[in-house]
Amino acid sequence: MPVSRALTASVLVLRIAYGAALVAAPARLTRRWLGPAVEHDPTKVALRALGAREILLHAGGLAATARGGAVRPWLAASVAGDLADIVSTAAGRRGLPDGAAPATLAVAGASALVSVAVGAALER
Image (cartoon, rainbow, N blue to C red; front, side):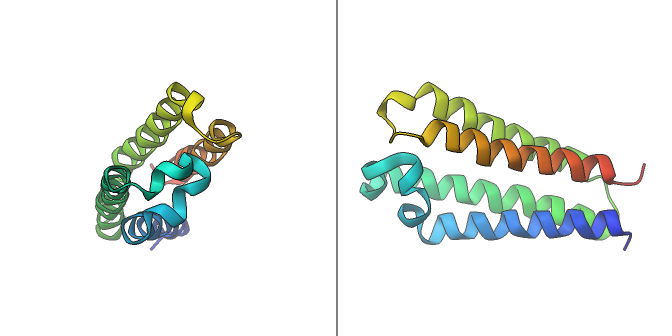
């Protein structure tokens, strides 16, 4: 496997692990982002759905990476998800803990940039 695909696979595996952690312990992972709302079952439902999105989307990308298929569409979808997280957080920032919106911009923004970078590094 070329180095660029191995790097891409590593990033995708980390995103799958993040998704699994969201499914398993949504409140623990998101308290700083969403505050006390993470203790409520309806919030946990949405967070687990976000975790499932992470798992399924990045598992699809990982499968494409392993078989030598097109990975960039999966990475583009990942970037779109990260941008949706940023926009959603900005829209609801008044009800969030102090610093949640800038932290989300930093974390989700960095994640999106990593996806763009590994996509750019893939062989043509």
